[in-house]
Length: 223
Length: 272
Image 1 (cartoon, each protein chain N blue to C red):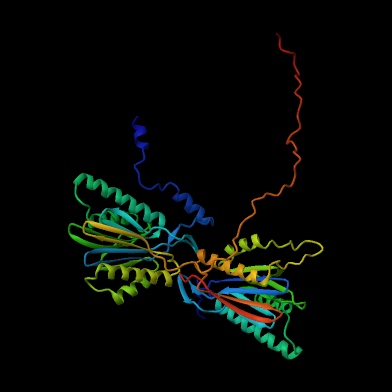
Image 2 (cartoon, rainbow over the protein chains, first blue to last red):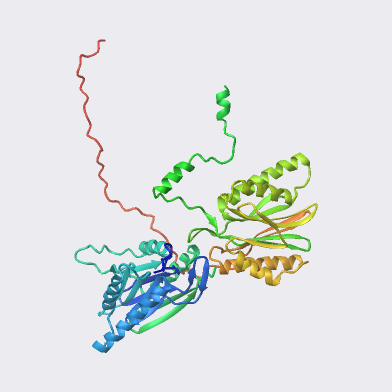
């Protein structure tokens, strides 16, 4: 039997930031398209966003090999679900599936930081935010990834969300209109790109609403 | 009297806390991080002198802490020096040597030579065995002509027609190796230096923002601060983000911290 090298690590961090905002009748999911390692850019055009179902979109940063494996696993599970139930999975169902999938690998985790955005059964925007081992929460907005420490305080300042402990429960969706939410997302990414070296190149925005799915792109700083 | 004379510090670094810090590190205390200028710095010799170039990003880990810092340091009127590595070290070491050069000029009444700066820098760096983490590109024009040197943190030096340093050195060197030739004109030289720095800015995450250039010729120098800004901000919202200046009033009633206490004299009253 060969001896394993003690310092060997199977993980890398490929950087990048994700944001999702839920509104009354829409959901905005956004991520930059830079993929990097150390001080090098691997590619300037790699999408971190994966459309898992008609009304569930996943944005993930962290280790792209694990993210890819996770996306493939969820897509396979969703295909089986469609064959068994003859319908698309709902966003809250996908949220629970993602949590279970992450926790299944509790002691050899997927190095992936996820934000799941979509529309619930009433057509209301929903955002689910995760840690690497499957702890999750439904929120009004969220950010994950290398620029999240810069983005979250700004979102908190602009979109004060009610405490999840309030009784009766208050809706977490943001009061912004769809256009305002997209403007906010563009602003936070332009700002995060100024100060986070792992965020940049291009911004991909996915907007989910009653009309369907729409993709938007915006250039970011490339340095 | 003689005891007091021994206590006078001789100058230089204080190593008083090294043993304490080693002990703390063994107990798992994290040392503070330094501001590193993950950097692209370059220099080349052209037909009339030397051109130095640098980017302007300073980082602390993954965060940009200064978007427009100066990495081309003054050494003497005819000598400048680009610094990469720990910002404090590059700044301190160039300031110290520039001071020594000034004193040397007062003493000799002659223009400083680049080799003098080079020797002072490498002596200092070698004596600290690489713990002063400054990687430098030194350039200038003196009585013996134009000179360009690189200095590594351990004190080794190179003398080169074109040089790059810092985390973006590979990106910048790829430009120099493909396009540098002897006897470049001033404009060609500035263009090549700018291109090399831009290569670092775009391809190295430790480098970014603007291009600084310094052109040194016989009896003349030109410091082109922010010669090029290749990365403008990509989005400015039509909405302006302002913050409410009002403070919410929670309570207007004032509660004194302690109850007023009457002091009663216990003993006899003082005599008149």
